[in-house]
Image 1 (cartoon, helix red, strand yellow):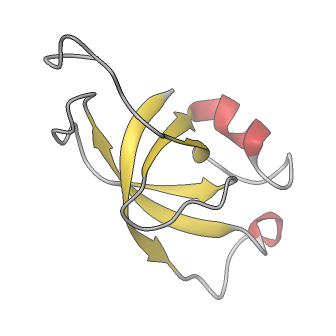
Image 2 (cartoon, rainbow, N blue to C red; image 1 turned 90 degrees about the horizontal axis):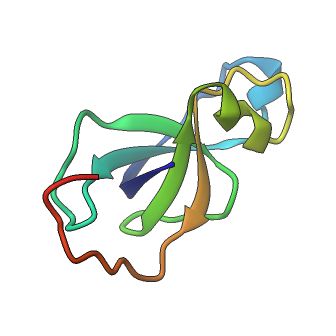
Length: 93
């Protein structure tokens, strides 16, 4: 799992039928200290996250397990909303 901040949302009126009803959000990956860590990612929201929230997300084949439909073509899924991060060292993940 990885940390990220929700920076926006995506509206797609035409998409795979297994994604109908899924909320798509844009995530900026971050390090535990909050610094950006890579390029933004579009992910399926499974927990009701909103813009500005710090979240936990999964990527790859395990992300599709969290999706509404198990056959959905999902590469990233938001699986948790972070309350706090306590990390003594913020230089890496």
